[in-house]
Length: 161
View 1 (cartoon, rainbow, N blue to C red):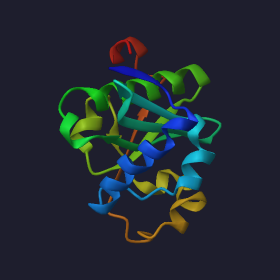
View 2: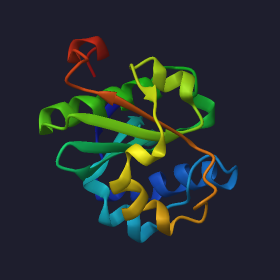
View 3: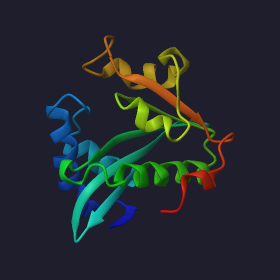
View 4: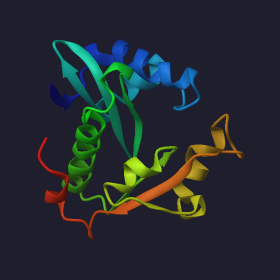
């Protein structure tokens, strides 16, 4: 397995992966256009040329970023791929100087392993006003907001990718 930054050639596989979870209501759907526009935000996990996981680190403001579109192929779940992808996003966020990373998720237990804590969505005004207001789930979003302060968490706790 290899965790690396995504390339343009990965977009069709990322699209299929994310939208499989979107059909189940677990992730928001992403269009091919939005994936091509944001490809530099994505990390992928690849095995023998196949994309088996993805996640993106989206910068929201000067000190705030979001991990979005975290997905692992169903046959590969439980093998640490999601962990590797979150670690890559957190490491990149810290390198960029981001102070806090948040997620909107149904997987609170998974993200709490990385010191993410639940927070009211009202603490994320840039996200709510910038993106959430255009979402099909707005204003009835049932995802849980969580964040981690990267200044309080030592990077080495996340291991090496």
